[in-house]
Amino acid sequence: MGYQEVRASARVLVPVIDSHRCSGCGRCVSACPERRYSLEVEGYRKQAARSEGDCRTCGKCFGQCPVGALYPGEKR
Ligand code: SF4
Ligand code: SF4
Image (cartoon, rainbow, N blue to C red):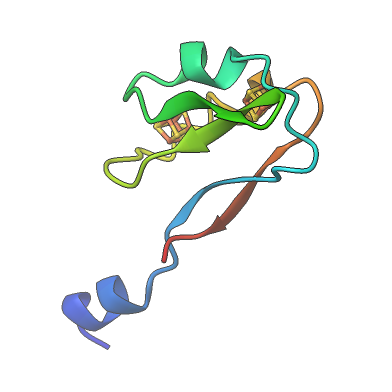
């Protein structure tokens, strides 16, 4: 298998937000060096949203979530 084939088959993991768990604390917003997160109003509560774009998979956001609402998933 050549380099291009290996690269094409590589799995890229990015954070996925469990919206049922997210408490809207905003820690992930502060933690991400790429500013991928924002807080959005959903009814009576705030909730994290992550924009598509450059995620370096640095992992800084995972450790910040106090309720385990961030987990690694495959990039779509
Ligand atoms: S893994 Fe790093 S770059 Fe990607 S969303 Fe989390 S903090 Fe931001
Ligand atoms: S750190 Fe976790 S609970 Fe806080 S806003 Fe981000 S995803 Fe939601």
